[in-house]
Length: 257
Image (cartoon, rainbow, N blue to C red; front, top):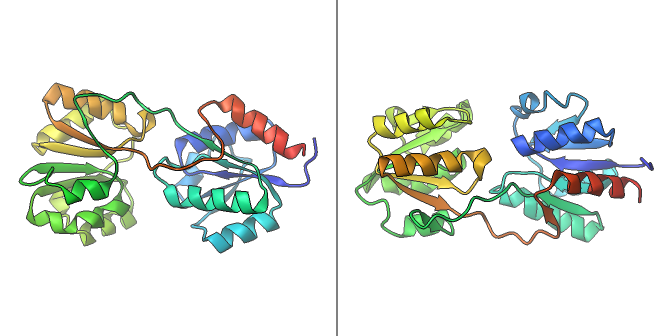
């Protein structure tokens, strides 16, 4: 195998940790990137992976690809991490670097659930007016709902990080309306949270089974609570797969070019 170069794994998710383990088991030279230090724990089962922490600008990515002699990009970022995927696709195309996206499986559409194309659509309409609403959408989107505190009673579940709590508080959420938990969250706990807060509507993202979407659907039906699911961003991936075997083949082809 030619090894004059490395693979770039865009990570920070459970999917990427699984791929990292497979990559290291196959002795593919690879460097993984993630935005937060929590990824260190995530990659414990792939201790030989070269991990870089921090956000990357477009300029950073270009320099990174050049300095590390990147020969292939495996994008295993979160389905809603639109910016990094778009940046990686753009640089891959302009630099002639092969790119593949690992897409976690989507769950079937349920006719009893409301699906919206974006959070913008949600806040422009009156879905949440005069309702007790639980937002499980990620802390970075909470500022979008700052004005909605006047129209509804908002609760949120966030990751147990100080930065996440600071964002939630700055977005107008009261301390007693915030819960910090790290997924996965089982059905019993999910149900208990909704019941404790007497939730009318839950807003979540189409993050697949890994993101607990299936559990929320089940609890919604048990309690009769309305569920709004924000669909994944529409990204034109040059190449995408749900199969790990395709990722292995991609890595081998890139390093043998």
